[in-house]
Amino acid sequence: MTEEKQIFIVEDNEKNMELFKAVLGTIPNLNILTSITGKEGLQSIASNNIDVIILDIQLPDMSGIDICKEIRKLEKYKKTPIMAVTSFAMKGDKERILNSGFNDYISKPLQIKEFRELVIKYLE
Ligand SMILES: [Mg+2]
Image (tube, helix red, strand yellow):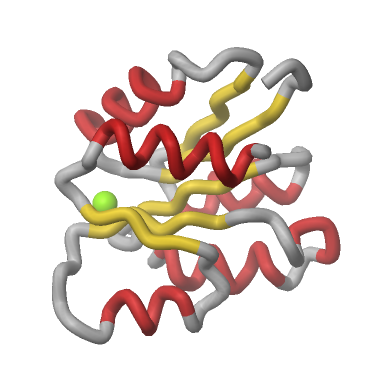
């Protein structure tokens, strides 16, 4: 990518956050903004112009699903790619997530190569 882009990650697990930053840090011209809580993340996303958003589903203060619904209420984020990250592996969860306004779904443990490629696809 030649144009500078912004990605926002909301993830409360320190190890996962480190992994996200390490993987996404290899993508040129990408600024990585983060939050470990939903409320702070939501405020920060609302006051910035983010190109791709990654939301952990299980957070201590609010769920990624609720954050996604709030983001979608904002005019500038109607079409922004939002990806869910979750360790839920139960049947039906993927559908529930995709019906909540997410564009895509990533399972933990993270498949690094696939994850990186998916993010690049949404950044383009
Ligand atoms: Mg979590």
